[in-house]
Image (cartoon, rainbow, N blue to C red; front, top):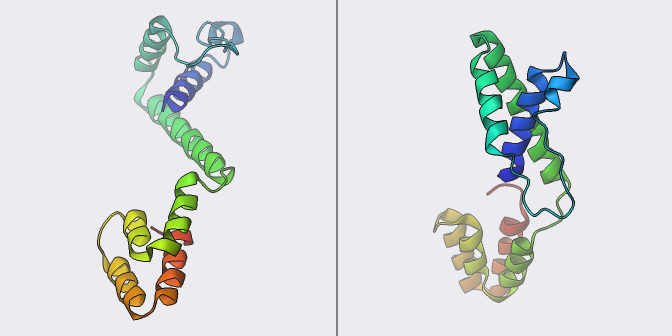
Length: 141
């Protein structure tokens, strides 16, 4: 969340002063390698807020649209570059041990997929495991 807020503020600051790069530089705080968080200081936030409030309504809408586009792009890149998370790995292991529990944890509720997994596991363990793996590794939630 901190990275997204920093991205928004940086985009606002650089887009507001894109015609004069020297003015945009006052909004951009250099990132040091040893710092743990990348939060801009209060003065930077206040300057960006004042500059944003001085824009016309049309310009504000354009800026917000650009920011939302960048956030979507950031999330898509993050999602595309991700390896399977440890949660998925744990759910796959749990699918072999207790298939209905893995489906329940993946879905977050006792819905039709959970009850189907219970029935398949009670009939015979292997169909329950197969169905659980399909649900856990499937694209939808």
